[in-house]
Length: 119
Image 1 (cartoon, rainbow, N blue to C red):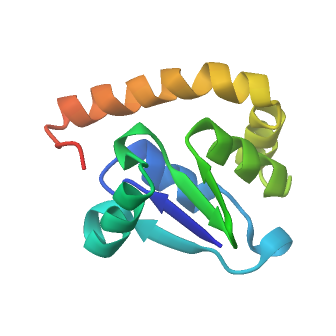
Image 2 (cartoon, rainbow, N blue to C red):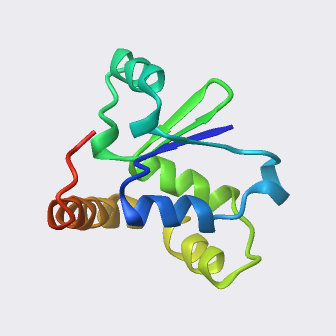
């Protein structure tokens, strides 16, 4: 299993560090899209714009943006407060669909304030 995220986005970086998946799915490879040109090319071939959301690759299944956080919520444990909150909110597909664009807007605003370019 792989999670592809923006390593220069403070929210994305913190999220992938806080989510606890090892107990439920085993090892998860965290890939900073900014540091991996090959993964950027692979995503481009799949017509996935990493600036629009994180990506979860689970064997042959690919989850993107709100589907990614929804799937991660379903896979995570309730071992920490963050995971319980994450699971409570994003286990509902409709809430993921509503909240993800707000989160993405916040990400873009923070990147702008920090003067970091899109990937």
